[in-house]
Image (cartoon, rainbow, N blue to C red; front, side):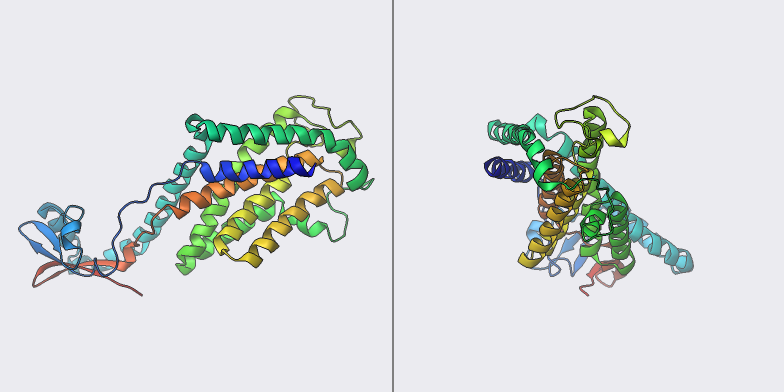
Length: 333
């Protein structure tokens, strides 16, 4: 069992890390963006990187004129409301765009797999199939008879951690707090949590209904797959709780980038998977495959975000006319 588990998670990690990643684009430092001057219909940057920025920072006179017209003092009250809403809308729309791009890259990844990636994918599938042979032994040695999802004991804590209700609440609270406090790191973490849950949750729900595997608590054999089923008692494969727990823990652990946070979060996710087997809600192979889906989705969104440049929000960049023409000021704090 242990060699197959090692092979399985090695394949999951390699697949998650090798999924298509966003390509970094050119970005400039705050020093580069501090001062621009308008000459002959273009905005010319000053600073050490001025020549390289000329191509990317040209503005036509018509666009500048429009900006100056919009800054008419007579419409200051209307502008105050517009500027308050525009940055928030820009942030949310950009997050939606990133999420759609990450989802597209995740679901279409097999179309771009090379030989090595197909090798690891085949290893993951083979490892999952091999674990099916240990399910009956797992029920005998790990499960306790007459158990339910909630039993009033310690295992209810990791079980709750893997519930969809907790995951949705945590994701929404993290993202909303990041928006309200203008904390970019917190907002991005909330978005990545949501992406990881959706990317791994959709295939999990589809496989659950299509496979129709009986849960251990039904008393049926581990090899019993009924096909399409809507009854929760026959939606054992893969484990949704394990998927949720590892989707959350992967994003939180990798975003924190702390060894103790990784130990605690991955340990909590592992306890969630063990609790589901202990309570006879899932077979051992169910939780391993569910954990693999959550882990792969989490690694994918983390890898995509690490390749994505940090953007300057509208509230930090201010355009105003001056004696030299049009000045772009960049507020650092």
